[in-house]
Image (cartoon, rainbow, N blue to C red; front, top):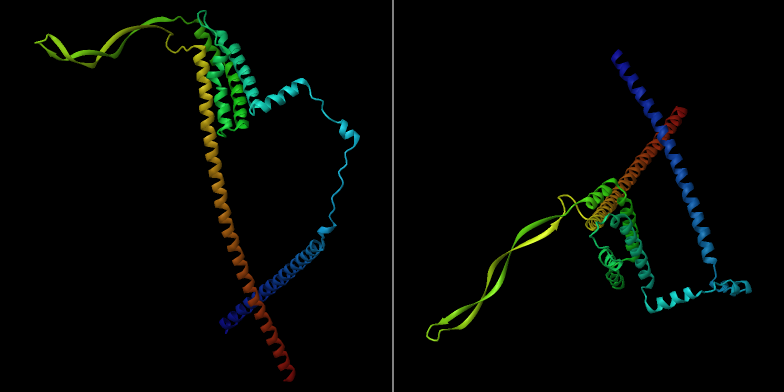
Length: 324
């Protein structure tokens, strides 16, 4: 009997627990239904009001406002100078006049850096680098303008890169390592180095010789090896001239910039791909969440049906008890 009473007590406790859980779920369903219905009503009202407002608009009511120019507006004009007129005429004659002016100014500034920070360490026998030769070797204005005209070069991007080049070279020129290299060159002594240069030359020979006429009937040509000595003045090992050092810095900047731009573009592409993958995964997760919510509401609906049925059974039991 004790086992039967304990089992009945356990079933009673479980029944009470499920009754309380049922009340909680049913209360949550009522709250969610009210909130969802309120949102739908508000959204529908907003759609109705905004739609009515948009439909009520009439294009015939739109009139052009009269354009008015006052005397002050007329007088508020910039008076062109002779320089301004010259620029306008130059731009008409040369569509790339503005770009040409920038490159000319940049070449002047870049050459000034070279003369001040690098050429100052030249040896007595070194000839200074002319501005024209420097511009052609370091910048190549005409080639850049041709590429801009063909649409192969973005002037704005090129301008940004050149300004970055000038800043990097200006900062690099005062680094201790740079000053040390330039100082070594200025005090270095060139020594004579003789090398054996091997090459070939073309010589003519008699391919067919006839003894009865004692003469050559046909001549041929062949390459023969030639060795010659060449003596040059060379710097000590590890020492480079100021021109070569400037060129090495210049080329290294362009190389590093290209590599890092490529890496930046690659990283950005990978990040975009990762974001797109996350978007796709997030969409799947949202759809899954909607399915689970739908399943939850379905279960709640079934609980509601069960609660209604239990309520009906209780009413029927109460009516039967009253009849009895």
